[in-house]
Image (cartoon, rainbow, N blue to C red; front, side, top):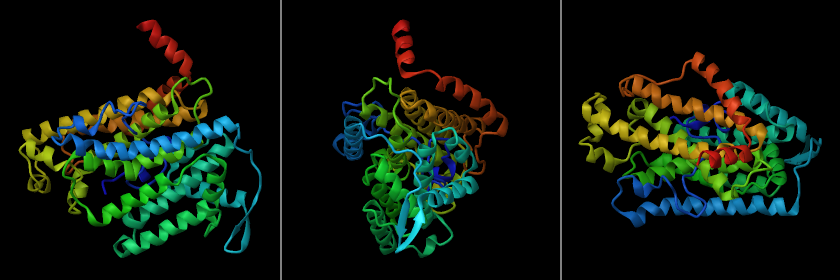
Length: 395
């Protein structure tokens, strides 16, 4: 699976949540709140429009459901409880919720240092919840991309999904599940994005080609956009935001898609050596390229032109995502903006490598990462209302 978000997606690199190859932070959708997406699959050289819209509609239905949960909580004014050392029962044994969350935090600190540092900017209750989501996503990703991936079967994923349903029902299996079970009882998080991530794992067990962008978009949603839908209810929307809940989720989903597309473009060579090509087959053919060209790994003018169009699409998703970041709560904006700015620079590095993503891995150097943090911080201080007033003044 194209090296995705999990390991890449860290709140410093993100509001992300996951650490290996597929997850992403805020998530990302490219639809507008009315249900049409500004960067829709149908705009990506897919001649079958009715099919092109199908994946987008599937994802948007999930967004609407999650947005409804958030709005329901706002109407009921049921605020997230503060730090309470509740006792959780796991397999008949009692554990303190603090212990479960602390263990999740230790995992984050060990495997996603940047992400962990970003979470420290959040309030304690939001921080712990993000840790719990991160750990579940990482464990899920490791099923098909970890050391025991060759032994994972569809039935193993069935058992993992059954455990997911149990923890949402308040019956956690272990300490990590207990932390997430507590989180979903406090925040308006729907189970569907979690189930959809497992669908992405199932897809990776049997699929190594994507005939068009519509198929690839759905995969990106499963393995990265889902993280956004899980995370936004925890990160929160700014009190002075005048944006619709759906539009905030759209922007989050857009970031997830953008990050995953960037992972895919960065890891073309690595994935090819594993027999996988996460690129739209029809667009490769339209550019005069084939699977063999990808496996041979030779940078040609055809490849450069193809990559330019792929990078352009990813940047459009980043642009769509950036519009919604300031709608998040103040404590969540900085890590999300830092993630966006840093991930987008990977595209610049691919260009700097003359589009050689076969043998060169594009990465953002430490100096650039450090420089991006104050820029992200400055932008995070702009409230949704000030941003709107500024845009109206410039109109």
